[in-house]
Figure (cartoon, rainbow over the protein chains, first blue to last red):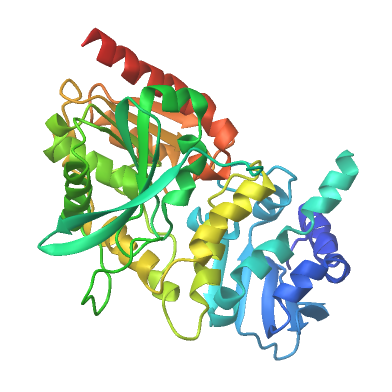
Length: 137
Length: 285
């Protein structure tokens, strides 16, 4: 049986806020206006199956799901997400590809939609930094 | 005349490199010790505009920044066809030919990223031609962290992918304006040029095992690396410097891979003492 850690719950709850955060970011929506993809994003052990249509997150469900299908996955350790979401992340924890380089994140599948919209995914997954800023304000 | 005019002057010089004539664009300002600045892979000399306009530095240095062939306003040479590919030999020759074309006497060369790597090669093979060498984000080698095939293919926007890849190399503390301007340079690069530069960086320019030949008593060497650079990490630079007796190393806080353009104010704190030291050596020498 998988043991769910407090960090996992907190990270899952932050991920669930992504659709609302995204919908209030018109510049990011414009960047993703042509993006339609199903992908796996989140903590390595409990990722979300995320459906993106015209740049909006239209559906998110915690995997596993019956016969899930996705084109690419970007998953990372709980520590990686906590560090990436700090308002001023530490060196080496501040970028999605810095995390893959240090082995804290894993990128797999058909990378074409990820690479054509690389800045979109970097910015989308950094949106929770604003929540941390709000708390510290 | 009401508009503010910057002191930078831009001109073209015709330079023969490896038997081919190139029309090289360069900008300069100041008078004194020649200081030649090399931009990063896939960008151009605009990265140096803040340094070029620095009132104090330009009182003591003739600061010069040129666009590498195929970059910025240095067009590909007449008759160029096929894929652009930078090598250790062609990069070294370009810098030496440019300095000779301007009759620069023992210039200081400061390069960033690929410019930092080639500075190490200048120190290995041509130290006597230079007064001092400064490598920003420089190391003898660094581990690749993405596949360069993504940089130039018809189904991926070259400008967007180049900028998005390097965006993470900028420190989070760098101001938005200078961050976006740094990325703009990447969005404007010609197709395949960034990838061609990285042939030197990733394949041809591995200097491991060679940097131990550097003699800093002939030409002083300064290495400065930003703490947020995860491409050329501080550890890469420190490892390189451990093989070079006399090399001076500075790890720069709140800076990434593009110190001179991503946060010129922060960078100035680190480069000013280095330039001051070079001036003092000249006066003592």
